[in-house]
Structure formats: structure tokens, C-alpha cells
Length: 285
Image (tube, rainbow, N blue to C red):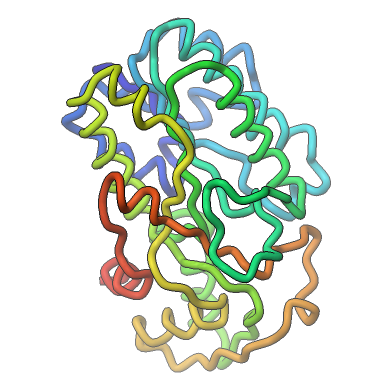
């Protein structure tokens, strides 16, 4: 199987490049090789490679900056996935796309299921939702995997920020009234690869039976302050975590208070997911 992987230098894409080995020939594209802001380039790349599977791990993820760059976020997060999906249908490929908890508004008391009403609070969430909708309406076989609070030991993320601040300060002030599940980028990649092994065995019928949207995040929940405290404990840092309210840390983009995702659909159909604290410990080891 020939696989076109976008975002190969990103948090999830870097892990996917390793986890997808053995499934086939991987044509890995970083931003220099394939810029999703250039829709003609996206279209031409798919026509040139003629993949059987497209795995889109690229995205515009600068949540606050998206408020001032909505057109760029729209091209990368919405229009480019739509082009991918249409081209996938044209060349006979399937598409795996990664999305986010930001498509929800956070006003629900329970974890969000795939069927819950969406309601993004910011430009980033709006553009990611539009990308999902473009894929669903394309007619191509697809998987949309929504994840949350992604971190890892590379790239810009909360874990690396906390480790840097812990080396510079005696205390950090972290929001304590937003709840979600920190998810290791390797968990996302390994789970996606596990699913795709099943898809490869099942062939076209598998895609007809299993196409759709799934939630893929670590199990359990915590706040950002709780996540920070766990990072300090795992890294044996003496830095003190001071919980604060969201109102004490204003950002350009609004954030949801509840970012929890119900992953029962994925775990019932495909595989179990690890607890967030166990995954964090493994990541840092």
C-alpha cells in the first residue's frame, strides 16, 4: 500500500512516520515539501503520488494566532482537507484526518460523544469543524479521529512549556477550571496504526462498515493545573503549581471549560486507550 503522510514533522506526524512502517510505502511530506496553504500543491501531490491511503496529520494549530489569521487557518484546516477528500475519491484512496475537541463549545456536563452538537468557540475550532464537514460530504472513505490536549517530547506543547518554566521559576500559575484529557502524540499514532492494520486486512468492505468520526484521547481527566502538577511530579521538579481561574489568564481565543471526549465508540470497535497519567509517565521515561 502506498501511503501519503502530511505533517510528517509535527507532533503526531513524527510518531505516525514510525508507527506506520510495515503498512506499505510511505511518502512523507513536511511543510517544506507540501504546504497545505497551497491548495493546488495539495491537489497535484495526490495526483502525482497516487496513494491508496492519505493520512493528514498537518494542521494550523496556533489557536490564538488564528484569530488574526482566519483566512490562512481556513485554507489549511478546512479547504485543504476538502481537496484531499475529493482527490482521495478521484484516485480511489481512503483518508485519515485528525481533528480536535475544539469543535465543541464546552457547555456540556458530560464527556462529548461523536453525535453531540458542535459549537466551536474560536476560529481554530470553526475551521477544524469545516474541514470535518468537507470530508464527510466528499463521498470518500474516511476516518476522522478527534483528539485533545496533545503533547510529546518534540514541538510546541504544554509539556515542554512546563518543563522549560520549571527550570526557570519557583512557581507557575496554571488554569484550573478547564478540564480534559492530556493525550500523548504517540498514543494517537499507535492507535491510528492499529486501526489501519485492521483496515488493510478488511479491505474496501472494512471502510464501508467503519468509516466515520471517532474520539481518540487518553482515558481519565484533569485540569491544566492538574496536568502541570503531574509533570512536576514525574520530572521531580520543585516548581510549585498555583491554580488560577481562566479569567486570570485571558487569551485571544476563547477556550472550552469542558474538553472531555467520550471514546467508547473507538474502544468498543477497535482497541483500548491508556489512562492519561500512565501515558505521561511512559512518555517522560
